[in-house]
Image 1 (cartoon, helix red, strand yellow):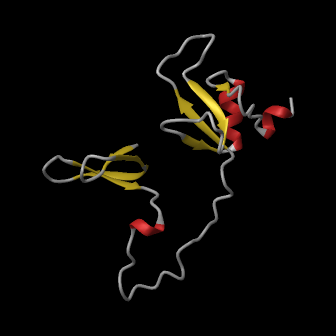
Image 2 (cartoon, one colour; image 1 turned 180 degrees about the vertical axis):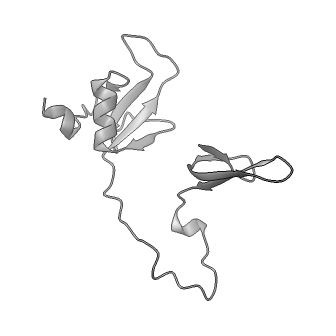
Length: 122
């Protein structure tokens, strides 16, 4: 889902549920991921039981392009840190990168030549 934040900025969120109130308005319960620097814990709350996970890191980014033709797709897959990756980039894991290349939804950058592990297996 796309969530519009105060001030008009948008971010992606995960829909956890929705309900309709007595006036017929819909309310959505959405989870968004934000960096720790953007939140402030509530004084006196114990967060020791909150599940904690480490991101294993993403090796790839997708770069949208302003066109889409059969010979040149609208998405380019890059290795993270590629000098040619510009603009709004979306980090993707190895599974997603593999699907985008295999299904020809994205082309591989000619500069960094990304090769997701799963696409190298055959």
